[in-house]
Amino acid sequence: MTVHDFMEEYTKPAVKAAKKGKPEYIEKILTEIPNFALDEQKAKWTEISQEALKTKDYEQSCKSCHKEFKKEYKKTYRKRPIQVSPELIVYLKGLKR
Image (cartoon, rainbow, N blue to C red; front, side, top):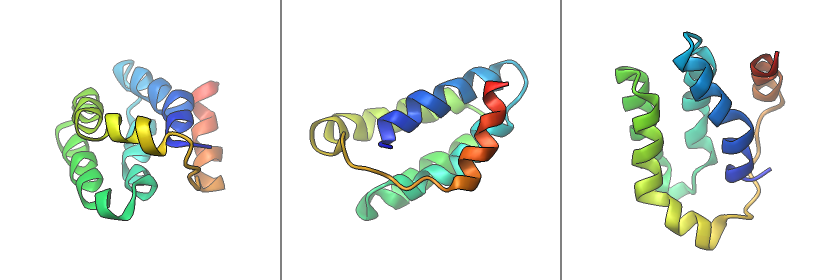
């Protein structure tokens, strides 16, 4: 799985669920997503995620991260595999119910 795959499969539906009053999925994702960053970007990803958790403005965190990192990721790291914990995947399966 790549960051792009994860965003499409889990993060987009989690943001939609949050809009419908179920923020627990996106909040869980935001605590985990800095683990998918490159080492040199991890601090900034953590900062963006923590700000979203504090303000509850989940879509703004997406925009902030995309503005800063999307172009480089798309060009250089799009196919870079990430390790997603099996526990997180099991938890996020609840989104699809």
